[in-house]
Image 1 (cartoon, helix red, strand yellow):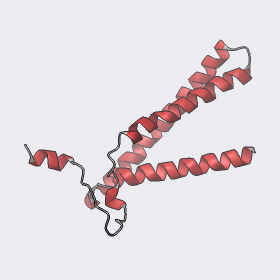
Image 2 (cartoon, helix red, strand yellow):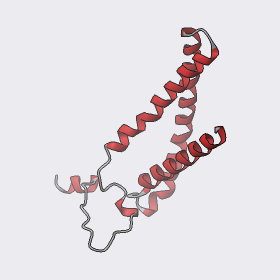
Image 3 (tube, rainbow, N blue to C red):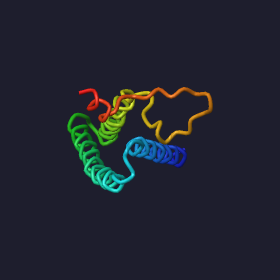
Image 4 (tube, rainbow, N blue to C red):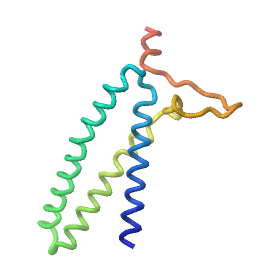
Length: 124
């Protein structure tokens, strides 16, 4: 059971990170992809460290609030679960056409363009 949960968790993280990276680069011009990739990789490392620090603090806080290590880990895992739900808010705010630049359009399907930074500057 542990191996199955670990495998499913790894698959979910891998697919999620690939999806976010694809959307992040979907509207990046070809000449800026190298810089965008470096920025994403650089920002990923501190975010990972911050996640580890938050869960470590939750584990220590759980140990102080509860009577045993089992309860402390329950607090830490609950904090990790809430922390993992935070990106969902950002994903729900994405425009429905986000990532269309890398999607294959089905014949007959209508594409609805969404405003970009360059479009908003044209109107000024």
